[in-house]
Length: 202
Image (cartoon, rainbow, N blue to C red; front, side, top):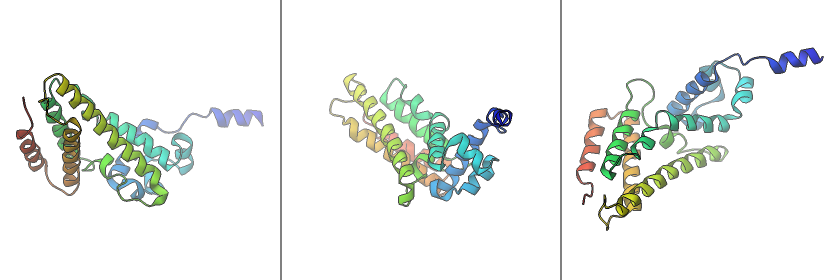
């Protein structure tokens, strides 16, 4: 009995966890949280439901891991944009990143973080709250960056960092929604460029 238990507990995982997580990301990105059934997820991941629970937890925990991967992968343009030397550079990089990410020639269009759980029932409240926190975090980081820009003289002293951050995030999310509806890269970049032309400058 002990020998058999050692074989079971010591058995190596029969799949690539990183690849399975990447496939789950694409399913959630394309179908949203509620639209991604366990059968669709495990089929795309190439594993059984039992293996999914063992490796990633339940569906909500899997979604949490997917969102972390999304933040570090397709959505990492935000972190890089915040390192730009000027506020205008930050916004330019954010708009370029969101247009690029949401209109990829292969894979889902739109933004997982915006559309993943906009409309969900009570059973999916955890996923919805997770995405609200994810979006709020992005807004807060951008607001803080604009506050530093005001303090450093890069933005006019009368500029409102909170309002500017809300404006930029709202436009970025709007771009993502339009991309999911089939609006193309060129048109969305033109819209972003129009917003940049009215950016407050010293």
